[in-house]
Image 1: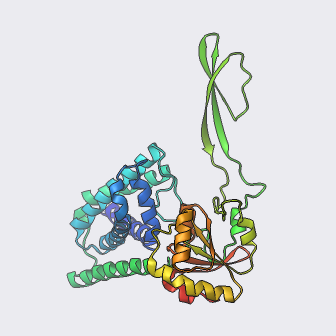
Image 2: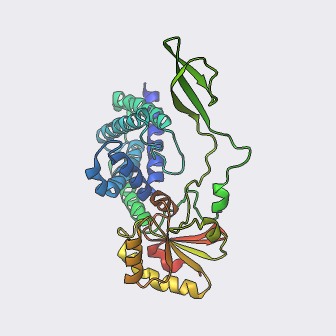
Image 3: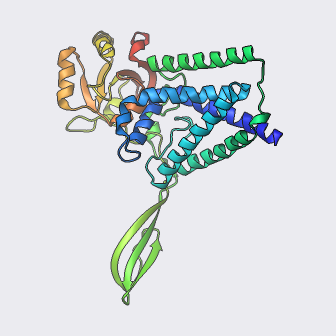
Length: 364
């Protein structure tokens, strides 16, 4: 039992640190995932949506800190029972999401590793079992160091976690795992190879044959049945190949301009998923930056999901000399974790990205 407890201790501690750090690298992205869970279609806890970012930071810092606490054997009763409470909650959440097919990706490892809902639930069940082992064998868990060094390490872990979370919120994630990271070409990320795996869908047809209902399963073809057609149900067996970028577009009210703008050699996108929720300190910086960029030959456009009235208001209020185009809100949030954020492209290849706090770091 003693050796099983120690193995569980190391595995659980390291996994919580890795999982927490990946999310701590992008707490804003994790908050977007929490908004999905809090929505009416999942947990119906919409009153928590305004606090999603705060909850996100609290959860991921706690995840990292508890992992460190477990490894060094600090405040072990508090640590073990906190881990148990967290994993019970997450196990319920991932089961609910998987069983009712609500959230396609749990966000357990941010954008670094995508897990299906059932994979997430399985992972949480394994962790739950390992943490129960720790509960039963808590007497075998001893501090790694004496009280003072353990306390210092625990305090450092807490302070560093808080600092890192604040740092990436004020700038951008230290590691960008998304398809819009620097160096990626957006056109290439949208291509579906000719030999890519195709989606597989199962069709269950229902007919009335001689007064009795019978079902026939096909891959989509209409069954050769001598009977009265009643209905058909479809089930996706395999999604096939899904390109890293699926819904990116740059649209005016009249046309899709995506291909045209992605062929520009010097393009700057001001990404602002919501104009009304944009951080005003960042908006104020846009006028001087975009005017300078235009003088140096850049094409500057805005990308937003907001309506015409909001676009006209911000353009006139801040005397902006570029046009805003439409794009899906979720896509803009994925492109850059800032509102506003800056993306520089050369014929569709991302060459620079910046939070509005770092707008002066963009090299024109």
